[in-house]
Image 1 (cartoon, rainbow, N blue to C red):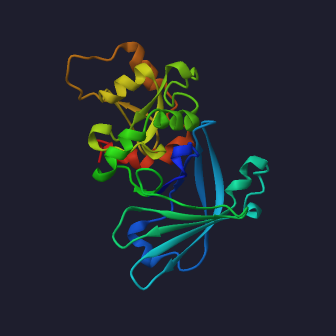
Image 2 (cartoon, rainbow, N blue to C red):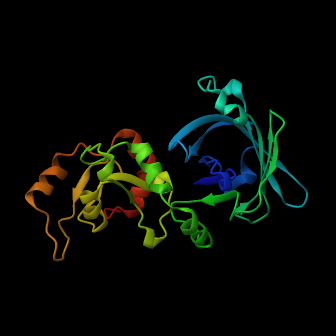
Image 3 (cartoon, rainbow, N blue to C red):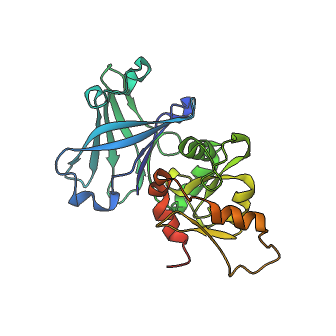
Length: 258
């Protein structure tokens, strides 16, 4: 899926998602500089910011690969806020042979330099729809309300009912947490609290192609859907297009239709 860069979390500086870097196929790609989009999550303002960055890789003789990510103000003309001045520079993500986490070296255009200190405090790690076992301890120690905040910031409303009152919105895992589902935006949707309960109980699924809710007619148990909920699900317009694009792979993973 990509990598997550933890930008000095001890100072709550934020988290960055770089989706288009495939650690399993680095040898086959990025021979030349490519431009890609990254997403930076700021916990202070609870918002995502999209950056355009230049990316290339540099190989060493000992098997180490450096993923070099260059953030240039000229590639991001829409970002004019002076508070982002510290974001321009070059990040060298160090990938040791066979590793799925590690450190990075930052060199800012303003002269500031920083070296990360390991994945438990600051660094980078691989992420997938199903979180690698070795990361689950880290995730549980640091998750707090980040997952919910990120999903609400993405969807802004319940993707089934279109309810916008944040007090009753929750972040629902598509691939369940108990099945190692990751705490990333590609594995979460915003649902009204009662609809979230129905979804977790598999009272309905979401079609990964259309984004429409599908009532689970094979459900066997003590719970039965009322006509109110049946009508709500049948009348739903389904997931907004941007949400469906983000989570379609996770929906396919749990879709009972194969």
